[in-house]
Figure 1 (cartoon, one colour):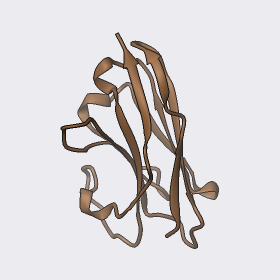
Figure 2: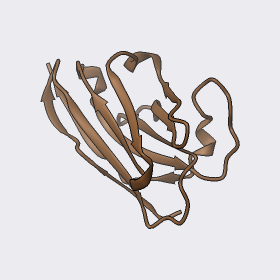
Figure 3: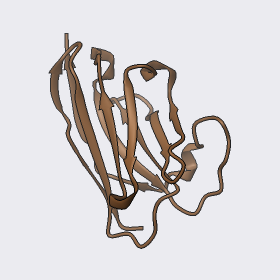
Figure 4: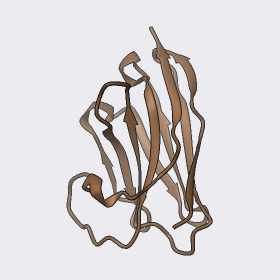
Length: 128
C-alpha cells in the first residue's frame, strides 16, 4: 500500500484557514477511501472527513460540516482538506489514512477499522 505523507499543518488564528494535503505514495493501486482524523493528547482519535476516491462521495463529522471540505486527485492518489473558519477546538494532530480493498457502501462515515494505512500526522494549532 505504500506510505502516506501529510503536509500543510501550521498555526493560525481563529477564523483562519489551512489546507492539508496527503499523498499515498509508492502504491500500486488506488485507495478505496482516504480520510482525515485528528487527535488531542489525552483524548481518543476522532473522525474528521473521508472521501471515496473514485466516486467522490464525502463524509464529515458534524463538528466540521460547512467549514471543512475534503477533495481528492485520483491521478496523484492525493487527498486534501480545506479547513475554513477554524476554531481553537480544531487544534489537534491531523492524520491521513487510507482504505484498500474494502467494499463499504454505507451512507455514514466508513468504520475506523477499515483504515489500516496511516500517516505520521501534521499539527494544526488554532489560537483564540
